[in-house]
Image (cartoon, rainbow, N blue to C red):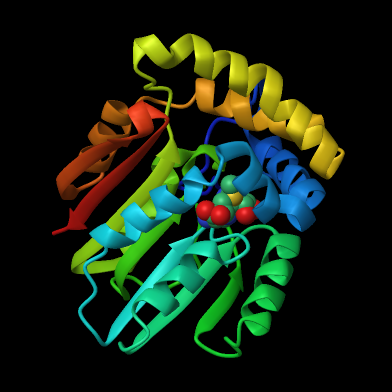
Length: 257
Ligand code: SAM
């Protein structure tokens, strides 16, 4: 059978936490992590970041240049945190939000959460892989991706797909943990992330392994400057990086030309 033009080498191995795993196994392993933590995912975000993820997400939305009527895609949108923030912040605007995530449990929790908050409509919930979006070319005015790129098997494919579905002139915002911590804080950050976060994960979700994965996936993720270079290489222009909280997280902003 002819090979799919996008298919990668079958012997390829990719990072999964501390380990390297076969590329075709990673998304299943990532799915298991989110199956396991989905119920307590939002609580864990608050506990392990001390609420900081809210400030980083607010910063991301501050950068979002919406011109209504607009179509926004939130890739790896999980339990809807970004999608709901967008709908609340731009309540007066006509915005169609599509949230795409690989994990059904995260989507189910997000859908229930949206209903609880009165959002019966307004979000299209799509269970799909960010590396192969079942969406048309040049369709969205904006795309957001928060803490999802690190979980992809091939981050270059995800960036290509996002570029493909954004309209020329559209914006891409990517928020992610990056291993760019300023040196004076590195010791404290390492101690906290390697020792404390998996313990909190164990108490709250009963799955310390999931949080070992999280911490190690950050340590092995490219630095913010490398992500910026990848965005440029894939065709984005006006790429800007904001390091947040001394480099614990980075916000990339880019435009499709
Ligand atoms: N964006 C949300 C937020 O900021 O709270 C959720 C982020 S959560 C850390 C990462 C999400 O990425 C999970 O919901 C997971 O299912 C999703 N994910 C992982 N690999 C994916 C892929 N290949 N395509 C789409 N979603 C993926």
